[in-house]
Image (tube, rainbow, N blue to C red; front, side):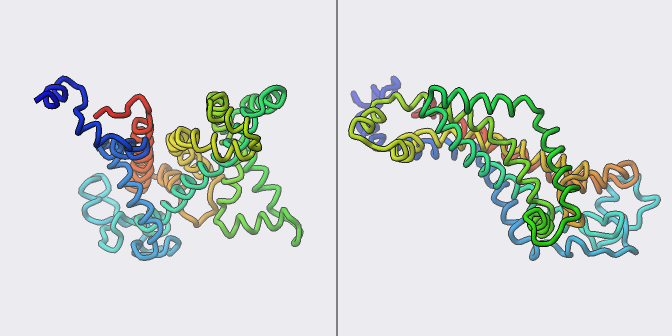
Length: 341
C-alpha cells in the first residue's frame, strides 16, 4: 500500500526504482524518441528515401536520361484530373506515372534518382562539418589562451563572408577555372573526378569550406564546459596525454549534443544543394537533382504544373522528415527531459 501511495503521488516506488536503476542516458533518450510520433514518422520517411535511392535502378521504370521526344510533356489521366487546365493541350498516356518532361524523360524516374543527390548531401555535408568543426573547436577549447583567441578570430573572419555568396563564388571559380586544363595536373584530376561524380565533388568542397564554422563554435563551447570537470582533472593528474584526454574523456561526453545539432542543420545542406542546382551551379546535366528539376519546371509552371510540383513535394517532404527527426533527437537527448514521460 505504501509503495502504491508513493507512486500515485509522483514518487517512484521501490520496484520502479529498481527498474530504473542502471538505465543509461542513451537508452532513456531512445525510449523518449520512440514516443515522439513526429520524429518516428520522420525517421521512417528518411529510411524509405534512402532505400529508394539505393535501389533506384530497380524502382525507376526508366533510366533518368532516357529521352523519347514523341512523348514530351505527356501526362497520365490522374494528373490531368488534378490539373484540368492541362486537358486542352496535353496528351494523355499511361507510360509515365507522373508524366514526362520537355524532352520526354520520365519525371518519376528522375525524382527517384534525384533523391540520391539530396540524400548524399544530407550524409556527406554533416560528416564534413563534424570532422572539421569538432577537431578545430576541440583544439581551440582545450588549449585555450592565445591558441583559442587565434583560432576563433579565424572563424570570425570566415563568418564575415555571406555563406551562400561564398559558395557560389567558389563553385563558379572551380567550374570555369577547371574547364580547360592540361592532363596530369592536380586540377585536371579534380575536374575529372567531379565529372565522374556528376558535379558533386565541388559541391562537397564548397560545403566543407563553409559549413564547419558553427560546429567549431559549438564544439569549443562544449569542451570549455567539460574540461574543468573532475574526471578531466583526474586524468591530467595521472599524466594522461592531451590526445588521450580528448578522445577518451572529452569527446564521448560532447559528441551527442553536436550530432543532434548537426542533424538539425541537414535541411540547410539540402536547401543549399537544391538552390545551387536551381541556378545552374549544382550537378551536371543530365544527372537529375530536385533543384534542377524545379528550375526546369518553373519555366512552364502555368502550362505543365506537374513538372515543378512533384519534385518540389519530394524536396519538401524530405526536409520536413529531417526537421521532425532533428527536433525529436534534440528533445530526446535533453538531460532535463530524463525520466519525463
